[in-house]
Length: 259
Image (cartoon, rainbow, N blue to C red; front, side, top):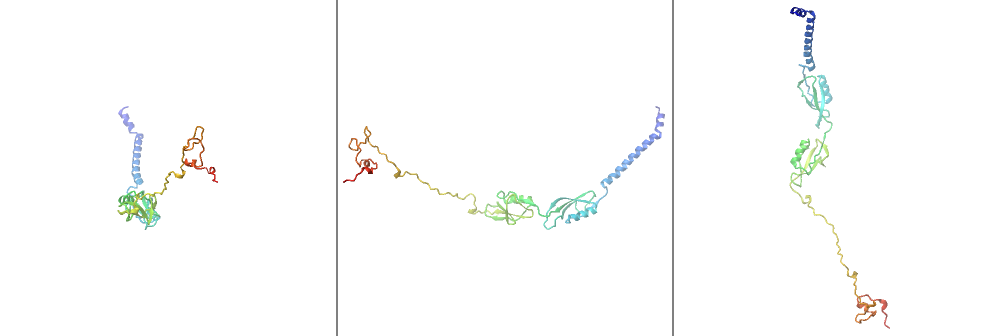
């Protein structure tokens, strides 16, 4: 192909038509991206955020709708002197400029005070440690009540004048009163020093009674088994007093009255 033929084809309407179509397409894409992004991102648009602090939630929703903003509850709190569903916090704050697509996050007031669990601090912590732990958990700690005991040692917890134990739930706005030792201890308060009580146990000495002792006396007998009277040296049954002389009980039947 000669150069003349090449330029001749390049000057054809078909080639120039395709080039023109490509240029138009690129321009349309550039214009679309430019204005499309501005429309999608709301470029240059800003809305002043209304201040809805201490307003009721329903009223705050209506106020945000009028300016094209949406509202969303993210948390609850509790303020005793404010009504339930009252707006406590909002983000972004009132007066700031934002786009219409931005969401306003709010914290509303709960209908009742949330409850908190009493930690295990009774007879386990000092006054300073207990106060730090309770405050970090959100409790309100009042002035301690001092009782006889080791100095600054926790002996009990009072809520509204009643004793509570570890694990009990109390309102978050309740005032915690700690019962703390004042450094003195009465004898009755001393733990573990009471003398043990012993039961009186009667000990019986098992000694042998003399009237229960049996006495055995050897009696001499001959080769035929007959008793030998003491002092006679020959067999015989002996007289009535023989057995008594040997220490044996006398047989009453052997004694006859003397005529």
